Picture 1: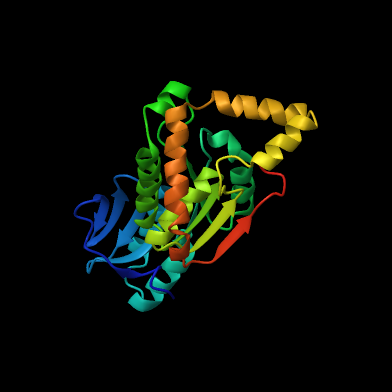
Picture 2: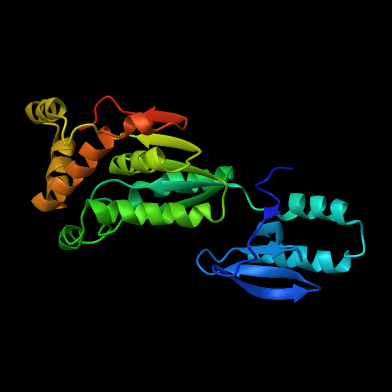
Length: 252
């Protein structure tokens, strides 16, 4: 049994509300994440997970409360605990969830851990909406999501696509991240050699991609992106967690 399964709590006086109680045992619901947990009279977390599993665990506890305490605690934690690992997918600059939806579906199908995604501040809408935010807003939205997940999970994996990898790297340099995966994370705003090659070879699909990408963001937003790029380059050396880098050879 690991500490992530059973450990002492403060009783949930700030972020939790009691959903049910029996002889000092409580089912609590988290205000933000909506997850549930079972605490014993000494505020020790015995089980945690989604509502239906925790309700069943609590009902079983009531039915078996006269059984040996230590044997019961071991059993209920093994039967009803949630995954202790979460994976957060972060999309790229001027992008949205469509960039990562197939990866998310695949990871959910594999069921190795709980999978989450996030729309960064200003993204997923119009060029003007993006322009109203800046690099600090983008970072803040991802950092807040990580803080939410850390209230529930003991291990956090970040998969960052493009600029999402830059943001994930900055978080990993400062926070306790279990693993980091970077997918086509840029080290320059544009790869000029690749772009020139596409133009002179009349690669219509790629040229249309460049035109579309330019139309999605303003000059102000581009400078905000460059700020994240610059800051991240200075922080790569502080990333200590295991990191997988996936980079295509023809990226722009």
